[in-house]
Length: 229
Ligand SMILES: Cc1ncc(COP(=O)(O)O)c(C=O)c1O
Image (cartoon, rainbow, N blue to C red; front, side, top):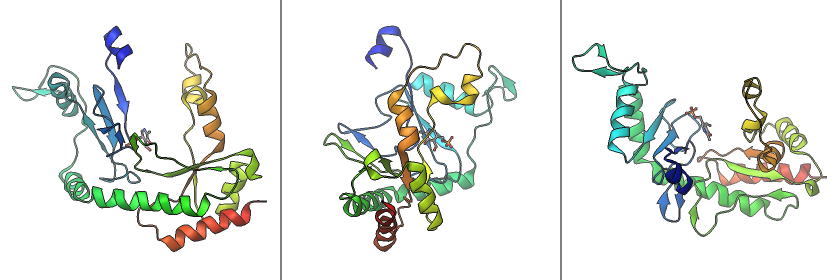
């Protein structure tokens, strides 16, 4: 934000997975100009698809509302700007309101899932487990681990082993500097991103539904323990 302010830039933050996460007591998304949250089906709360943009800036808010609704101004059907149809349906909004009412209990369950995994996995060498630093509230959108060399299997080998046991997992996201669609852009200059590159090859999301039972988490952890050479 300091750099942005110096150069008169607007910061748009991707908070897709971070509903209700806290950084030094402040909600993620509250200390930038614009933050975007996802309501996709696997997010902390969902409307099936869609999302939310938040801002404290009235002018930006007005602009976003205009763009969302096809740039409609008055008189209707005159478009001062070319907007988009990004309107949320009433059905989705109703679902979102119901989800929002449950968010605190969902977060309690999400955090319990993470703490339960931590309990079962903490003594397995070679697994780096998620942490919560004292200045943050982690909402554990996914239970995210990385597989270090001393685990004895690569991330992919562990994921295959889990898949054979009927346990579905996901890798972390592919970093921007490796995205084929960006690399095709003539002037795109990929920067070295060693941390992101490493997370792309070592990161694994374990099943993370807030409804997971302690027994299921224990079974998944037991399979991981059994797969370790
Ligand atoms: C960090 C991040 N950004 C963006 C998205 C995309 O969100 P949506 O599917 O609502 O466009 C996701 C979805 O997983 C995400 O995790």
